[in-house]
Length: 230
Image 1 (cartoon, rainbow, N blue to C red):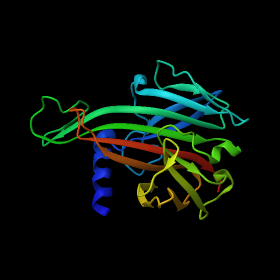
Image 2: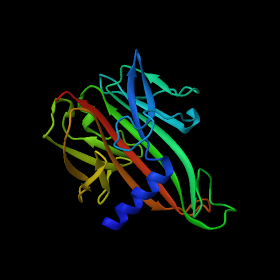
Image 3: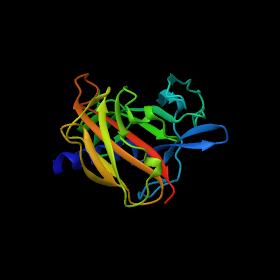
Image 4: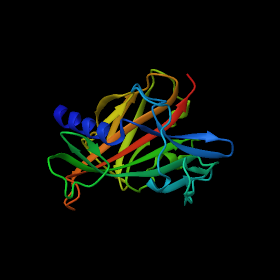
């Protein structure tokens, strides 16, 4: 298991330069940002990205109703505000690593390939607690808090549910604060102790074989984001 977690970490670091994705309020909108602002990794606070990589966005409103949002064509992508829960999908695409470099291209026609993968991510932000926030949105890989995380503080434990298309997934690594804190149990659950106030980013990754001829592996990641005051 330790070796598997290490390999996932290496691949993700190569694919995205260890960039985090997060959602941030800006006036009456919420902006999708990428960079190192909330990470221990060195690098720019925010990093530019292609808006075409943001493939979908979903909103759970204050009444618990789920709706799809339009995604603007300009980056950084600005999404509608007022969502209790907001989720955005980001596809980084194909990556190929050789002894010389790592490139954002399929492995097709490249010699000396060491590793290749397809990378996709999502980030889900809890801005306001509603009962619907305790249930998965049901599309893709996802982390769901099983209680209101906004009332918690440093040192408190939060129970989480890891799902794929709404179904619990066992054995997935869950990372928090640049460390892997454990793996999801047979029921898809794991408890994480919160360590600091401010923005919280909790991430899981699912690695599966890929047989499309363009990459060897599929890497899908999901991040849960919320903020605590203490």
